[in-house]
Amino acid sequence: MSASGKAGGDGALSARDLSKEYPGPGGPLCILDGVTLELAPGESLAIVGPSGSGKSTLLHILGALEPPTAGTVRLGGIDPYALSERNQAEFRNRQVGFVFQDHHLLPQLTLLENVLVPATVRRDRSSFDYVARARHLLERVGLGERLDHLPAELSGGERQRAALARALLGRPALVLADEPTGNLDRRSAAEVGTLLLDLEAEERSILVVVTHSVELAARFPRRMELDGGKLENLGTAP
Image (cartoon, rainbow, N blue to C red):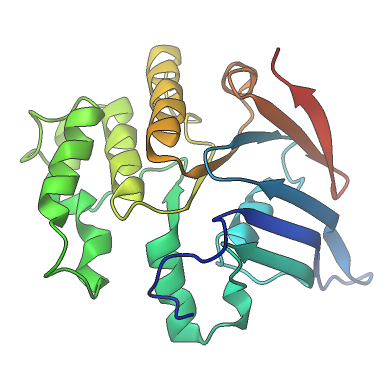
């Protein structure tokens, strides 16, 4: 199956025995050590842990941005690291949506144009109405009246909501969020957290969030902690 198609299998995310090492002056530095997790479509997971524990590295591996030293990742039965560089980039664009602590909106583009950026490299632009999809998502995140505004004209919370809409534009199977509320005030953080969970449920995507926020993590039905290279269950919400 090509990377341009829908993820095969049941759409699940499977990461098995992931390890990540970086060279260091005193020998290899182990960041991840035998990390394994499984998530089905519609499931969400919050990962907590101290700074420098490898949370962002794990997201990069799950999102086909950085290969593991050992172990496997499969999304919908596809191993992105077995694809050519071009097909891997296409797989990432179609199957994975990213939300970062910094929204990464382009300052010269309007809100609508920013949300449409991922569609500029899609092969199906003529057969799918991405503009309508972008408008719908911006309405859904409460920004339907701000389509022509530039990022500088928005609050931090509004920019992050726009970034969430952009991540969901292509109906990705997997949404990865790295400290998505880290730069927001408490009220905006709560709003973005609600949208993350609500939209994940509506879209039936897999959602993985890494966060330092106890409040945000507590809202997830499943929580894990990454520390010392190991990923351990913290249990499920009652």
